[in-house]
Image (cartoon, rainbow, N blue to C red; front, side, top):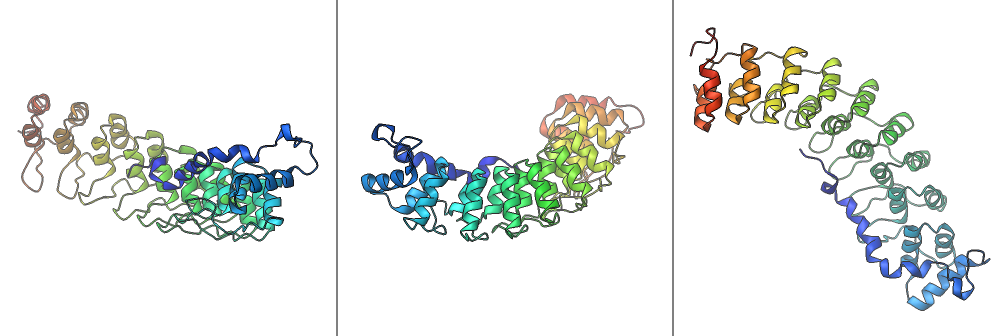
Length: 355
């Protein structure tokens, strides 16, 4: 699982302002026409002039007002021109409330809530206003929405909650708001079985991980592949997070995936010698722990060509003569892959290994 910002299509909403670029100027104050910033009727003059000259309907005017942060213009468009605050305003299916929540425009959020905006409405991708505030990292907006009755555990079609969105985007401030003010359930999981702790572990958010653990996050929860937060911390190559999870009592022997790999197996897969050392020396992981096919970490490192890890495991007295379920040893793996340096290392090993 490699989580990137671009994986989540909600970010494509940012194309909308670009599409409207040609109309951005239509809501600006028209100084040359006497509509300066001190004109007593600036929202009315602005909106009416734009509607008349450009032929833009009230909904588009509302969208532009939201983009540019012109609250008084938005109020006029809603209250005098009849713009519908529940209608979608862009190609993503965002309502005004969802849009301004993503933008973090708290004054707009207050206004739309006072006007009775549907707080549970979602866009075309299933993002509610609360999801959007979490994505944007806006704790003030998050609190406003919670106070107005937003469902803190509302799920998108893929099962993600606002807390998971905050975790994905590294917004600890929003997570604290969701947990402490909204009582967010940390054990809710996405359709893939990922929790907020999983995402925080994978992305290396040590403070986030510690916070979730302090508030009772289930440390040994696994996803649909039976991978634990420790597996994801290893895959992300975050030694400090691995240490925090081990200190908190995570199961270091958990097998994940069709291959049944442990955290130690995951460490050689990402070629991280420091994590291998930590798991062996600090976490007490058995050097000879096997995956579902009977492979040890030494066999796997030999197969992958990880010479430094092989040297370390040999130095720690890993068994070279052990065989997997097919009868292959670490030397067999290295020979099959053409890793001659590793073959030499293994064949030159100390007498306790009978080759």
